[in-house]
Length: 163
Image (cartoon, rainbow, N blue to C red; front, side, top):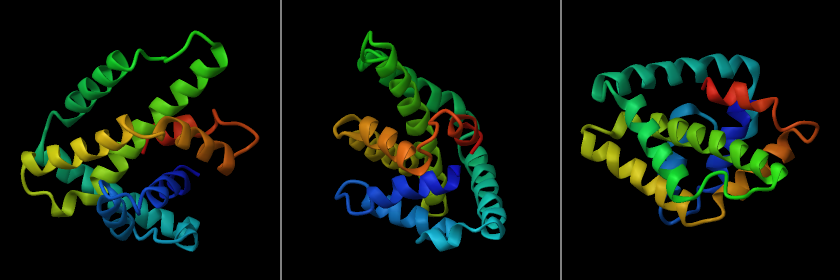
């Protein structure tokens, strides 16, 4: 379900002027241009590509996890996370944050074969964050989770985090 969800996020932003190319490149890298490519057999191949890209990211930027954590903390601070005092909305804010992290990582890794320097890496992350910060991303991803798995939105969280 997590790969299907991340595919849907990439699909919903593939026409974005800012990050459309990154989303399309990610879909091409993973081979997820349509839902038919998300079969259980293809998910094994998808997971291997993800692992290969993760290894390359580790080589390019050994402290990438710390950097991404700092970016997320800044995002949370400047956006007054959880954005509200309402418990239901706080749950959505957490779900949105988890989805944002997964989208960033998934899309970044899907573009890693064309990233050759830390400057290129920063350009991709900056573009993704601009869209996340200046669009309805936090609402879009929560709605996508509910479309994919209407019975519960929390079941996908552990699966997404591990991608």
